[in-house]
Image: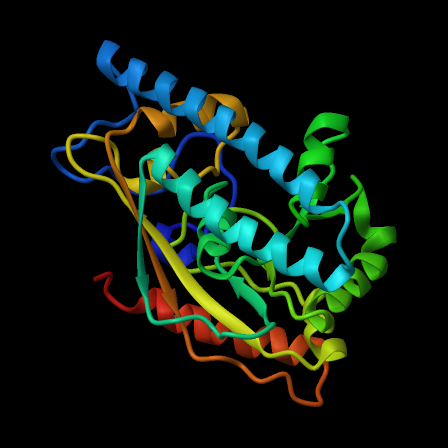
Length: 286
């Protein structure tokens, strides 16, 4: 970094070790340090969420049997949408949606802040997501049952196959969600969008539905970049528990104008979508 360059001039930071490159807001704690009651709240939420996900897995597995592919696809979409809405309530997250998503199959793409992001998008659209394989039979089986496109670790060699799978899901009438930044960030803007999965929209002749997503916490708890955004090296289970200890979280998700997938290269489609998302993030939060 050049001397005299401010944090704002550097743009999005990506993953860091300690926290956002700006001071905490006045009247807020620097870290999540829950008391006994807050710890109990987190424990109750994580227990309820685990029990609910177990039941959801059973329903998803049952829906796979005895139905043609079109019926299975419709059941899976409804299950993702309704399940995500219930899960958000159990986790203490209140979604605040602005606008409406595209009603048909589309590539849903936006900025990436937290592990909560895909749950929010699924609650509104029922989108099927891509994710890294966890190399765990139980977790991978659950993700697959929920329609997740699993990417093997070191997935570059298998990326064309994953893009083809996403295009196939779009052709069957189901939205597909992606985070083109490729990682979570503090913001306030977004990282450049990687173009790979935009090829799926072009191949399936499906539009792109951009979104802008931010979170809000309330004093005296830390601000969302410190409490909700998963951008440091905290292990996921620890971060999940800390988030569930917070009394209340608001998730502000704005649906932005649809970007048509014209006859163009995926790079230009990714750049156009990124521009729409950047404009959405620059607007004041409601």
